[in-house]
Length: 85
Image (cartoon, rainbow, N blue to C red; front, side, top):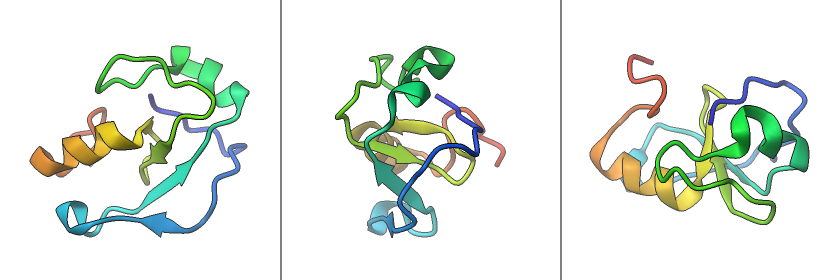
């Protein structure tokens, strides 16, 4: 789910592991208004993003379940929705 809203309050600390070095992820639990935007679906697993889920935000502002994007980055090095970035 891509969310370009600048109104999202996300902690500035970034996490990562060796599998996706160089990609900064912000990890947070999203507010309800973020989850209603774009149907609140993780485009990797196609499951709803729910309050309390651990969510990762990429630099392009797309958000996914943290576990989904971790698995994605084991095989791919770009955003699922912005492969040319």
